[in-house]
Image (cartoon, rainbow, N blue to C red; front, top):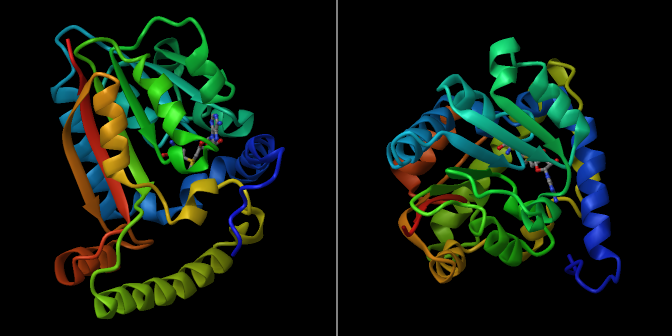
Length: 270
Ligand SMILES: C[S@@+](CC[C@H](N)C(=O)[O-])C[C@H]1O[C@@H](n2cnc3c(N)ncnc32)[C@H](O)[C@@H]1O
């Protein structure tokens, strides 16, 4: 595929397509993405959130979920008792999230519909902690976006970048071949499951919205450099293999040792 890079209106097209596909995804977003909800990935999410909360300075509880979608991270964090802000381009995704908040949780929530890049340029007080989950690969210029996000984390505050597609080198063609084979089999099962559950999937609609995937994903080492330049200390980079279903994810990680996803935990210097 020729990279989609030479179009003058590319940035706007990426935004428009993200709005359109996530309006379609809305309430059923997480049902369509079992790679985020299977037991293997849930366990990784829970551990990542626990590590994030552990390094949050005492008595600090104002957290932002950048690109919060339908609440994959927002909901477990609000359940822990934090004061949560969520920003997302899609009104429909925000609405889906809202529907899962009772009165008390709603009183601790601030939900904003808008472009995260514009939001991060605005004059807002930095947050005690920030989480960015499965967002960066949707952005036209994720590197400068991350720089702006960093300026909105208060000194001493944690930043978790979670579940981004990993740009990887292929070291072993055999292992990579097996990795691809498992993915193909799993994809067939996934399509059958979605059909059986009458959940439409929108494969042909993702030409621009997953923009960074055409470059093979994102390299965590490049993010490390940016975070360090912006005054954060990188505490941990985890690379692993996410799969639609928990058992193939377990096999991929414990036997093949391949990776297609990463998470980064960092902390703003005081
Ligand atoms: C893959 S979903 C992830 C949602 C959620 N963070 C999660 O982990 O499930 C990506 C989300 O980013 C939002 N998004 C994409 N581009 C955006 C932008 N420029 N500004 C704000 N939100 C954006 C989409 O609307 C969508 O809800």
